[in-house]
Image (cartoon, rainbow, N blue to C red; front, side, top):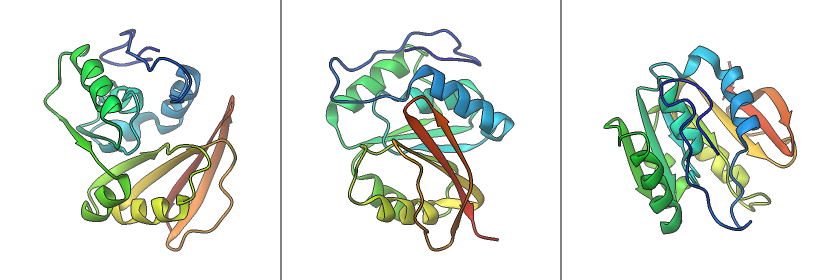
Length: 177
């Protein structure tokens, strides 16, 4: 696993051993950030289920003003810190070890981009997306990664794009106009 583009391009990142954690693949991350393009520049970015932190680090590499990394797992937090050390521990990051839903509920209207990659088959996806809706700015977006396209409606949000990259599906949400 490596940083795809930007300031930290090519830096190798630490990964989990085994198959319990499923990081977003390099190919999927590259495609995602090609879609986001210049939107990342100067954004406040939340990587809500960070895992290794690769998505948030990619956002930093491509010019995000601030990235908040969150994960419930202490092992993930350790790997995120290890990976941030590989890019010289930037000062424009915040690391949170806790529940993503609670974090998003208290950070209302703060984020330009929220990236959600909860464990596949999570039973509380609707609650996760509703909390994310509250945490984005008026023109903010939410990207939800899953193993299948998201089809349910979320009050106040609309899906404006869906993409498949390998086994991952990305659903892009914004506030309803």
